[in-house]
Length: 177
Image (tube, one colour):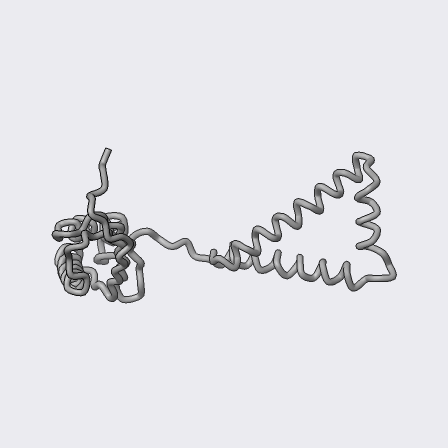
């Protein structure tokens, strides 16, 4: 579910909650919400009621469509497939491998890899914290080359893209407790 659909879900849930609270208040005998509901359902102004109903119906249908049609994304990649079955590797295992590879470089303090499955292999986003004494373009190129070759060597999976984001240039190594 994308950000737009999450926003729709939040607005829709709020709208439905407000309607139920107003109806419950009227059922309990509170008359103030009754005047609000009468204003919305007033026969002289049907465009307000029908507009709100149409929007609520469209949003509800959109959320129903998204919930039924979205395929659950697996957190694994198929390595090989034979007559006996499939061999899969989890994306977490690849993240761990990438983390170990990148942390071996001098000047790298912290590594946060993220693996994205794509049609013909995987994409890797690596967030790093480095020391100020490293050459960032050279270090980035070395990380990309080593990660690509090592992941291909260990898993047999083609790495399509490797994006490196330097999040922090720190002097001190992060404490591990």
